[in-house]
Image 1 (tube, rainbow, N blue to C red):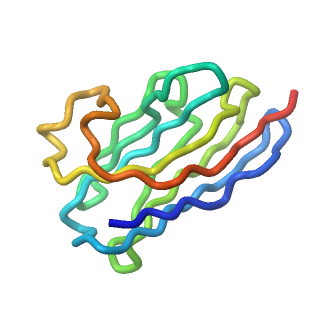
Image 2 (image 1 turned 90 degrees about the vertical axis):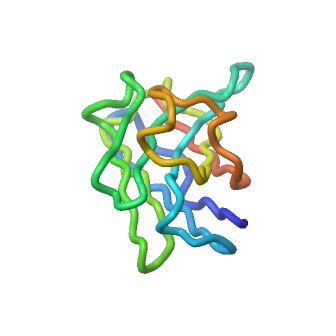
Length: 127
């Protein structure tokens, strides 16, 4: 399984950024996909998860209403649209894949609930 995240960069507070993750080596529509982030000096934290079909999603409270996760099963990609960004969103963002069914993944999930990880893409939000 390979997950390649992209789209990170520098954005001003209040701005938007869209991350994308391209997956290969797996039957993409049989995997739940998640986004996590890790800020300097902090533990990796959950951001969002999306079900196989894309119909069900779950977010960390701090990003609800600002971030939207979506997927394109035909292209084997999962995106994270981030709006109204805040300096505290600054982190290395990772996409991850889980073969578990959406309903079997704890809400919020932990990193251990995902078996495959990408390399991360850096997002910096300036104030």
